[in-house]
Image (cartoon, rainbow, N blue to C red; front, side):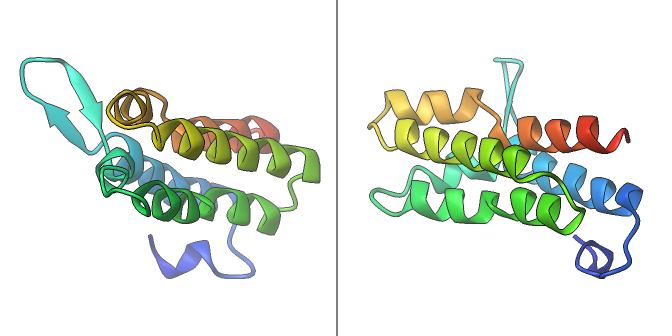
Length: 120
């Protein structure tokens, strides 16, 4: 992420480029050989017992924060936060939750919802 994402006069296109990179790192940056599956840092952070899913959820709140800064409606931001909380809750279930956490890519979903809202 560059400083442009936090700049008060950043264009929606610049914000979306930064959020696309954020979602890539959190949801898709690692390819699992032989499975044709990609995971990111979010499910890896979630492997830490207890606080891993909480930390991943806090980091994932960067997307709704940027949505707020771009003027997205509160209903969209609330939906994004609901997705993050649901993923963290399911992710806290040992083993099965970690698998679900790797499959459900909440950051990509939230970024796409913001893109749809902004028309970018």
